[in-house]
Image (cartoon, rainbow, N blue to C red; front, top):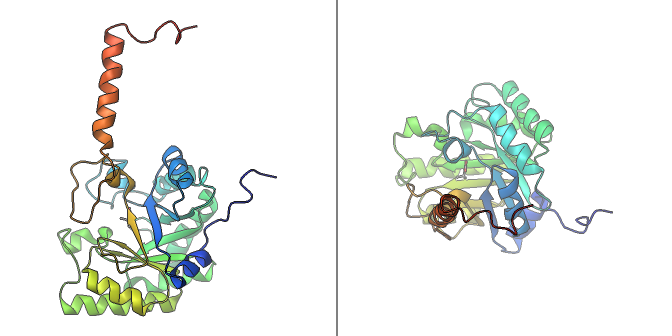
Length: 271
Ligand code: KIV
């Protein structure tokens, strides 16, 4: 028997129960084995293998360039580390918007080749057919509305979305549509807190916010941002729990100095 067999895994059903009893859901991104292991052992509920890997891992300006093969590489590394959390993987830009059959084959590759538990897709009515087809194959889908970074060139800017009534009404309609279609939850990104709270109270599935205030059922942040590894990204919603980039620079500088001064390795560190 495995030492981990007594761990109760987080499932979509567990998340639904958490919403019912008002227990908040904590979600973070991870893209590699070592980081995923630490986050999972800390007790996180959901690990998102986000297409934000395109920014924080690969250094691209947006999430658009990352490929399905690259997402599969990141997701399979994460899944090998995780014993408890639900692992959700972003379907990358271009893999699901145009054609629901291609969308299903992308989702199936993710499930088969990574061992992840669910996929996340950005959008509402426009991608309904793709969501339905993926759900019909038994793959759980997490929706994503509001500021959807794969549409950044349509928006033109990363400002708060749905401040005007027309966009807010469409977002509410889309949230109901995602719930009716069968999504197990919805991420709401960078929208007014009041609107997010309204969605969370009307919709029965868990609503996870990022820049959407605290009247929702849970929160998600990008791990590199909340640990202070990224420095250049400072939106108002981001709370930095650490200043890891400074700590890492300090450690690396000490190592460089020790090497240059012939202080590393010492006798105990040698064979
Ligand atoms: O890719 C990502 O990290 C995300 C979160 C910001 C929700 O979609």
